[in-house]
Image 1 (cartoon, rainbow, N blue to C red):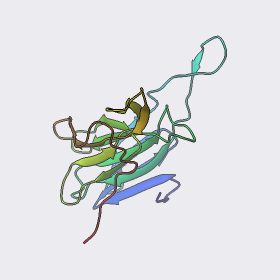
Image 2: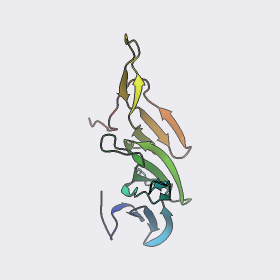
Image 3: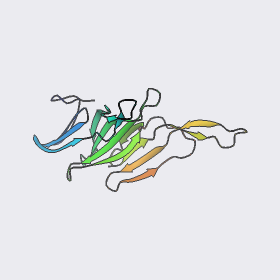
Length: 170
């Protein structure tokens, strides 16, 4: 993650700057604040009586889409664990100052030359078809998210295990 100006996560696209600290996100254009978000959407039990409190799901990284139209916010996922890491991904439209949840995912990245987000779902178990006796295997799917429409499209399904979204260079 890029650090700048006291931000634990920072991203710049032209005159737009994004600064993340803990669960707070600030957007600026040409040095002037245009939006602020507190992304504390999850309540966590803090004692054995079920009292809800702060979750400590901090912003891990910020990344602008290739054309600078959308900001991707990677926040530590509520359901993350040491054996199954997970992030909650949000997108921000700086034109409308609107924040939307894109996905809970293992990993996500912008597709080059596009405003679509490629992400890998958190791992889950699925039944292995054709097995003589019931068996489950780990499975993760590749998905696309279009922030303009909010539409999610599955690329894979079934027993695929796409651990990390990545791109190949030629």
